[in-house]
Image 1 (cartoon, rainbow, N blue to C red):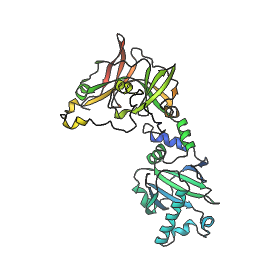
Image 2 (cartoon, rainbow, N blue to C red):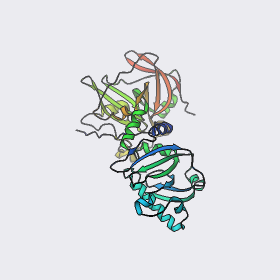
Image 3 (cartoon, helix red, strand yellow):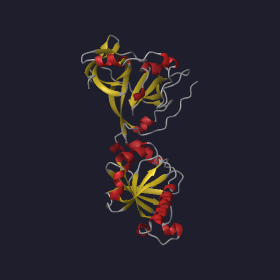
Image 4 (cartoon, rainbow, N blue to C red):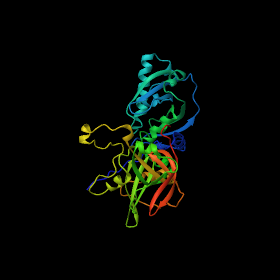
Amino acid sequence: MTIVHWQPPAFTAALAHHELWNAILSYREVPLSQGASSAAFRFSAIDPPDPAMPALLVQPDGGPLFAAIIDTFPFGALFGADLEMPDVHDLPPALRSCIEEGMVGTIWDAIPDNHMGRPRIVARGALVDVAPRIGGALHWLSLSIDRIATEPVRLSIGATMSSFASVVASGAFAPAAVNRGLADSLATEACHTLGSLRLSYRDLAALRPGDVVALPQLPPDLIVLRAQGRAHAFRLTDENWVCLGHEVTERYRRSLLERVNSMSEDHDPLPRTGADPQPDVAAADAPVATMAELGVIVDFDVGRMSIPLAQVQAWQPGAIVSLDRPALENGVEVAIRANGQLIGTGDLIRIDERIGVRITRVMSSSA
C-alpha cells in the first residue's frame, strides 16, 4: 500500500505579489510572536528614509538581499554601554563594523525560526549608495522588536515587493498565525478539468477555430480541480468527495486518465511536487524524436470560481471536501491549456453521450 505524504501549505506564484503584500500589511501594528522565541515584534509600512541615512546591506544565506537602518538598539540594557546609534556611526570603521555585526546577529537570533539562514553584511554606507545594489523599487517597513531587552529594537527594512512576498510565501519568515491569517484572507481561482489529450506538437499546431475535439470520458466518480498551479483529484466515496492528491500542472508527463488510474493502493499516487518521472532505461538507445513529434498534454477546463486559499491548502490526501459537479451544458466556455499554459478557448458540445469542445480561439503556432 502506498503512503501518501501530507503536502505543507504554501503560497505559490499564482498569487500576485501585490495581493500578498496587501495581505501582509493587514497585520501592521499587530504584536506578533515567532516560534519559541520570547521576542515579539510589530511592523508598519513607512515612506522611504532619508537617502543620507547610514544603512547596511544584508544578505541572508537563504533569503533576499535587503537594506537595514537600525534606528535604536538597547546597548545599555544588554551590555551596560552608554552608546547610541549616532555614536556608532562616528566610530572608527573597524570598531563600527564589529558592533554592527553584533547588532545584526543579536536581532537575528531574537527571531530564531525565520528559516533564512545566517545573515551577512555585504555593504555599508549611505542609503543612496547601497540601495541601488538591490535593484528595483524598494518598499519599506518599520520594525519594532520587544523583549530582547527592557527597551525595544527599532529598525527600518527596505526590499522589493517581490522579495517581501517571496519570503512569506515560502514560509521562510512569518509566524504560523500570520500564515493562517493570510490564507484565510486571500482567494485563488479554481476550475474543473474535464479531461486531457496527449497530442504531438504537429497535431497541436494544426488545430484551428471550428475544429471539434472529442474528450475521453472521466469516471463518473471523479472530479479534477485546477488551483494554485496544481491539479487536485477527488473521488466520490460513500457520498463524500475524498482528495486523492495533486500534481503540478506545468510538469504533466501523463494524460489525466493515466494519472487518475495510477491513484490506487497498488500504484504510486500523483507525483511529488517538483519530481521528474523516472527516465526510461532504454531511452539512450531510442531514436531522437523530431520537434514535431514531441508530446504535449492538452487539458480542457470549465467553471472558473474563487476559492479561499486556506480551503485549497486543506486539500490533502484523504481530506473530505464538499464539491459540486460542474454544469456541462452546450455552449459553456472551455479553457484550453497545453502543459498548464492557456493557449485557447472553445465551446462545450455534446457528441452522442460524449463531451466535446468546438475550438473558437487558439494560439497560432507562429506566435
